[in-house]
Picture 1 (tube, helix red, strand yellow):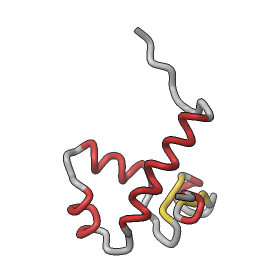
Picture 2 (spheres, one colour; picture 1 turned 90 degrees about the vertical axis):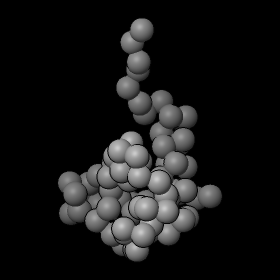
Picture 3 (tube, helix red, strand yellow; picture 1 turned 60 degrees about the vertical axis):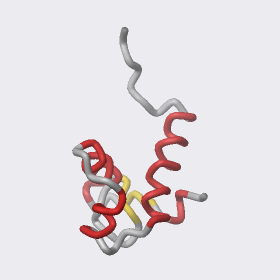
Picture 4 (cartoon, helix red, strand yellow; picture 1 turned 30 degrees about the vertical axis):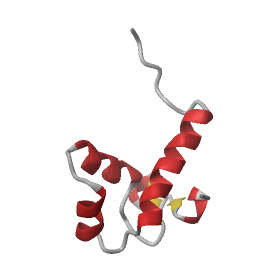
Length: 76
């Protein structure tokens, strides 16, 4: 999967936060919903502009961020 087909960053939208292309839904919001206990089906029903592929793109994006070491170190 090429997450760049689904996730964009535009300084005019949500101050440049990564968002799902064609929406104002941020990667951060998707992660907050999942953290709050929502499942993929609930998110897709609540936000019909999302697709299963755009949901997968969120995780592909995060994987690339981690591989590029764009994360906060966890202190022991």
